[in-house]
Structures are given as C-alpha cells and as structure tokens.
Image (tube, rainbow, N blue to C red; front, side, top):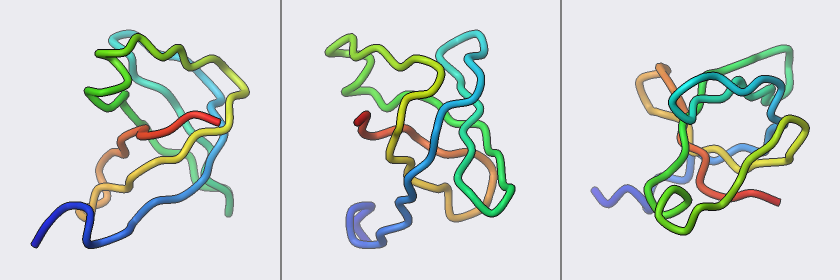
Length: 71
C-alpha cells in the first residue's frame, strides 16, 4: 500500500513550537497532537509559526503526525 493511498490528513492550527521542529497542533474536537515537519518542508526551509493553519498526515498507529503543508 502506498502512503498516499490512505488519506489520513486533517487540518489543524499550531499552538506551540517545541525543539527539533516538533509542534503541538490542535486538530479540533479538543485533540492536540505532536507533529513534526516533513522532509520536503525542511529541505525547502518552509517556516511554520504559532497560529499557522497546517495540513497534518496522521500516523495510523496514533502516535504523531507529519506536517505536510502550510497554509
């Protein structure tokens, strides 16, 4: 199965910036998850700030999420 096949993306808002490009993201329903930047966002040096609206790919096992898009 390709990663792009299962579409577990949600829209959230960054509430806190943590060390090592980790972020707390509020995805609604009172849920707050830890998310990290995707490799392409690091490579192109896309900045993510508190209050930004981001698209997060949720880990199927419920651990973390990956920020794949800002905006």
